[in-house]
Length: 430
Image 1 (cartoon, rainbow, N blue to C red):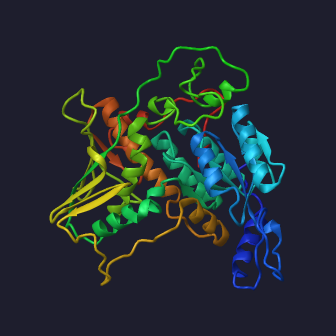
Image 2: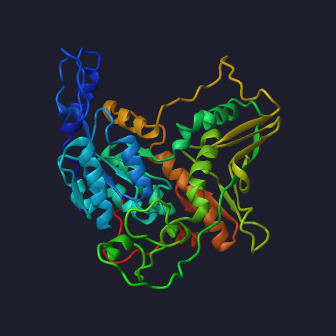
Image 3: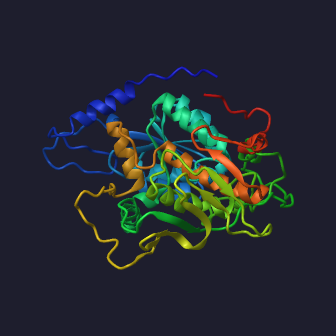
């Protein structure tokens, strides 16, 4: 693999464009009408995005946050299901008036000169491979959570993004959306308003299980071998990849070969908020403690250096229990004991950033080459929390974890930081 960084002339152009933002020039993009007398900035300045994975999440992100947005063009789409990728192309062409490229190979999309950045919304087992390919190709990246499938993958994506200098956003949008409830909760915890945090309870689903679905006849139009990618070979089942343009989240998330279960699906969101509030975006816990009951599906605990405990189980969302009170937060609610803990006090307290949208934050950071709110290390370490929790359930052993070395102290446990991929899907070292 050629690991030579690509030309950065596109990035230099975008940076120069940001420096001219104060000039009296009005941007015009497809579907947008200029005011009379306004000067049109060249359409070349638009950020050109390729979308990889057009299931329900990828389609929603594309239609709500990219298509028709000023300063953005979707120039290519990719999916292994023909009907999904052609539907995506149709949606793009209707708005942008372009002949959007549709392909079933992400490598072809990333090799294009008219793609500056990629949005990845494929199943979890594909994320790391596509992230690394994007970094090597010099494309900025937005990737859905959980960012990785294994602990080793979390370490690798950080290294790849850092080496190639890409602007990277993880799709942990609770830091930017949902009425800023999670921002307020994290601010209050970090400001010490409930005292030293003793325990954080996170209520999310179960660990995944091995896939035991029966084989079914494969309909035309889906490249099933490509859908599997690095995962073990098995026969097709529609539960894993429902055919066509559907409106639900497929259940591949329940199986270990492809994802981290309900624990990682929503856990990547709520554990992310726990990490943020605890100031652990660049670190993590040091001990893994399985539940005492060998059959329990809740109760796995991660312990941080300062003694704070992160527990899988409790009400939906995250509940922070400190020496002086508690804060409970979820997408539709936020509360505290005692009352008033969440009220903002400006004197000397850290104010966390507010953003209008997660994809919008990524696009702005591409323009000015700054760091998004959920950059690669944030996403990789939040995913690592999910992986450590799952290991606690799968192996039921107390373990010591080094979050900087990405290793267990117990040598035999380091076999659990990754899995054996199919031939031809080995990951490079960085």
